[in-house]
Image 1: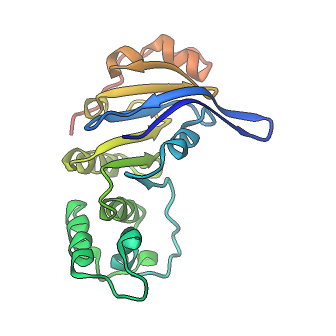
Image 2: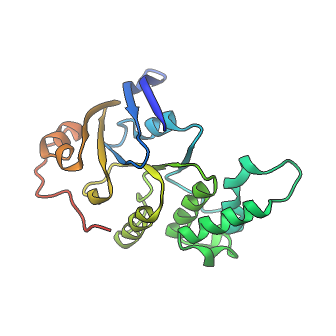
Image 3: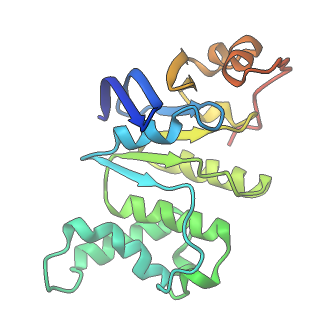
Length: 220
């Protein structure tokens, strides 16, 4: 499982992570929450490594690839040089497409589908790697409410450990077993969603007064 200890990351004079220790347990669903610039993406990059697959926030809209070809990129580490994908590779891609309800997209092109469909295929690519841990960077940032609900329902069906970043509140706290609140490159609170996502903690992280009635959305 991914883990970092006392990690500090700087971009020039800017400290993106400040002495952060973070570990993920098998089967956890962790939300990393914080305002823009708090270090969320940097934390995911620090966690990335063997056994993880990263789903980026943005998938290019002009990829001149077939959708199945795009998902097959997830098998790159398994492919033998100068050989076509094996039957095992093809079956892995089939399973990944089915897992995200995108088998019908296999014959289409990446530059001719919607943003929500591209996001599903990015998750399929990550699943095709067969990594046990998914790291998702703001996967719902450009989706409407219905597509966000569909995304969370999709993630709930997957047998994977999940770490997902978001700066948006409210979000579906029922899905997550733990929330980590980041601000200015440091973990300021972590634990159960109902404990971490208080008005006081959110106000401290965002630097503005906040009064929440609830941070829960409908469960998936």
